[in-house]
Length: 636
Image (cartoon, rainbow, N blue to C red; front, side, top):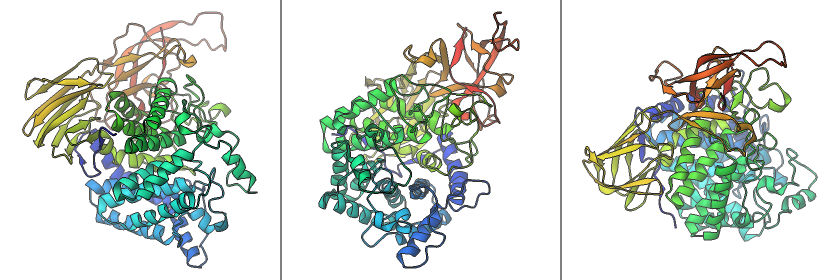
């Protein structure tokens, strides 16, 4: 059974710290900007048409001409769903009548696009109504439904309005009737609905949602040849996926027999999130054991230092153990968001800092790097090394762009970042009847259902002092001590804390009026990769707290390729600079620069010159024009 659960949607209210400032950017800039993009109002951005698709689908169901038809990818509906979800999280703590009215209008469009039997998907409603549910591998009908279910749950929790929730309950019943009651074969090519159904079940108590989630997990991979058979029954495709690689969609074997994270990385972690949630909800030890194996495989053999996963552009996928190239990395933003989801559900099943440590790493590095600091440009791919003129140009690195585009035709990542940042409180805090858990350090106020109310003051991830004040209640408080902080101190009301530590969490009995202070280690530190990773031999990376640092040309005379970190160097954190990169701390260290004599190859050893190198947090890179960037540096 689960040891804890996420804090409620409205439980956390951000303060003026780092998270609060990011949520303000989402609220004031990103949500309006993305709504304009979804309505094709931003000049120069990729056309979306996503909102218009719902309007046109509604017209088609009324027997009217469906406007200009359907445009975009078969999964275009999901962009609107994620935008609505981000809006819900924002409204939960920052009511905005104008934004709520805009969202209500979009929900009206969605409701009008639902067929009488509960089916909801604009692509098939407008283009190919007779082909519904015939292409589970490619068509993403359940994927889009899952995202809209998540939006429906969030919007109801935030506003109390149930129109979208009723739409998606009807949609869930439609899918249940087809796949459970009538026994239609198959499971989604892109998992997502599994985790969404679990949210619907907890919110509504509808057992059909739980049963459908369990069914889709249980049947997956039982017939590894299902997609080949499905394709043989039709003579059409929506984008020509290769159905002959079962592991690509995580269906090579039943989920309880899977040991390695395979295939499309986003699909994988969405599936594993649903599995972990279901395992805890139904007390299924075999399913949880599979999640443990998959978690360990990802985090110990297939994850970048930045929390990025999915190392190849070919299929946006996992490859094999220790294949983690820096310059050709894929590391999709959505995949790291999915990893946060997976970590959070694993953390609910067992309170252990190894899950929260990964959740933190993925969020502060790859997830935040996925959005430009002004909130208007986005990375889909997150490499750990970039060289303008090669990155984004060479055939092998065309996907590794040196600057963030404004939007994408396949725009899954931008609205995903928005919903992740606006909902961070759910991941930062958890609770059960007797204990409140602080998994991440998020400035603000948190009201737990168990009666404990806390305030948290911190400038994390740049300040390493965290202070909690107990405003109401008497409970146990469990605080994670990050694995990277080798030194730490905790006091209660000014005295050394009498506390117990278990699995990386300190447990304290607290009551109203108590002040708890945690001091973490602010010293920058080097990280060294396993010798099993070919690209990391003889290299080191620099970190401070949860932040991975990188070296950009703009801070280092335009050239980081000729730099090597000097062994024995003691990196020094500079003062916080509020005017640099929306406020950041640079790290300075001793380095060596190698001279280039102009020859492609030379028999003369390059001349060396001692110098200083400057590093900035990885999430901030690419915000000052095109320039070189490296995370892993040579050692000298």
